[in-house]
Amino acid sequence: MQKVRLGYFLYSTKATKQDQIPLYVKIRVNGTVTSLATGCNIPFDLWDKNTKRLKGNSSIAVQANNRLKLIEDEVYSHAFALERSGKILTAQILKVHVLGKNKKPTVRDSMHDYTSMIRSLIGNKYSSKTLEKYKQTQVRIIEFMENELKIQDLNLISLNDSFLYDFEHFLRRVHHNNQNTCAKHFQRFTTMIRYSLQRGLIEKYPFAEYKIRPVQKEVTFLNNDEIDILRNTDLGETLNKVRDCFMFAIFTGLAYRELANLHSDHIVDGYDGERWLKYRRQKTKKEVNIPLLPQAKEILERYNSNGFRGKLLPIISNAKFNKHLKKIAEICSIQTPLTVHIARRTFATTILMLNNVPLEIISQCLGHSEISITQKSYARVIPTMLKNHFDRLKGVS
Image 1 (cartoon, one colour):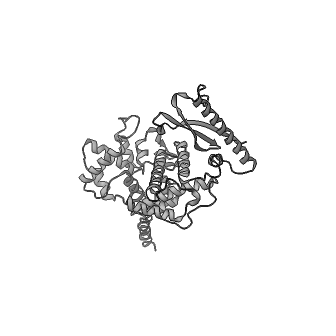
Image 2 (image 1 turned 90 degrees about the vertical axis):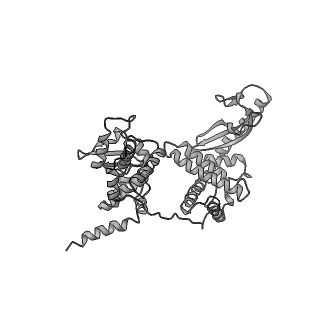
Image 3 (image 1 turned 135 degrees about the horizontal axis):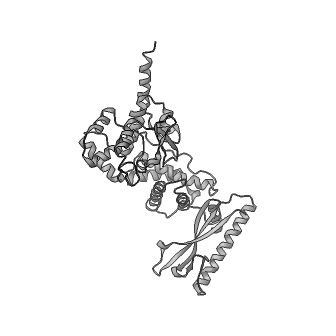
C-alpha cells in the first residue's frame, strides 16, 4: 500500500470557553496533505504528542482514544480499498471517503488544501509572499460567500460561471478593485479549484465561459537625463546611500529582495576575466549571470571597506527605502514615482532595450521564467526599439 501517514494537532485558536481544544488529524499521502476534525475537544494537559493519545483512564480520555482508533482504522481501510480498485490516492480524496459520500468537497476545503500545500513548501517551491497573496484571495472569497451569497460554504460541484461574474461585481463594488486586481483574484482562485480537479475531487473544470484579462499597463521608466540628474545630485549622507542602492538596481536589474541580500559571493570572476553578478532570482528561482557595468562597479567600490553586516550595500527596510526615494524624487524634480521596480524597468528599457540589446538577452538578464513574460511586460517599448533598428537600416545602401 502507498505510504499513508497520520499525525495530530491541537487547534488552539478554536479553544472553547471551557478550555477544550479541538483535535485535528493530519493526513499525508505521497506528498499531498490535508486535515480533518476528529470531533474531539480535549483539555490541553491530557494530550500526549508522543503516543498520539490522551493520557489516563478518565471517561474523556477513553472516549477520545476510541474515537481516534476508529478514525485511523477508517483512513487505512479506505486507502487500501482505493488502491486495490486502481483509483488515484491523495490525502484530499481519502478525506472525502472518510467523511462519507454525503460530504462533498467544498470551496473552503479546496482553498484550505491549496494554501496548506503552499505552506508546506515555503522555502522550497513557494515563498511566504505567495502564500500571503493566496490567503488574500481566500479571505475575499469567504467574505463574498458570507456577505453576498449569504452562505458559509459551497460544494465544488455547485460552482459555475455565475459565481465568478458575481464575485467580480462584488470586488469592484465593495472593494473598488480595478481590472488587474480582479484578474489576479480570478487567477489565484481558479488555480486552487484546478488543484482540486487534478486530485479527482471534481470531474470537470466548472468555469467554461468566464474570462477576465489584465490590462497591459504603460511601462514607466527613467530616461538618460533623469538618470544623470540622480547620479550627480548631492543629497546628503543618508539619501546618497539610498540613491546609490537605487542606482545599483538601475545598472543591474536587481529587485529589492536581491538588492537587500547582495553579498560578496554574488560577485564572481567571469570567463572574460571581468567581474560578474551571479545570483538566483527569488521569484522565479532562475540563475542570472550578467557582467557588472562600470557604474555598478563604481558603487560597490564606494562601499567596499564598510561591510554592512556581511552585505555589500547600505540597504534599509523596503518601507523606509521607498519613503526616502519619494523625497529624492522631490529634490531632483523627477515626476516618475521612484521605486525599486522602476529601477528594474529602467535597467530593462533605458540601459538594455534602447541600446539595442536583443529581447532574449534582456529576458535572461531579468531572470524571467519565459521570454513571453518579457514580451508582454515591455510590448509598448518594442516599437521604439524597432524604430532604432530601422533608423540604422536607412543608412545601409
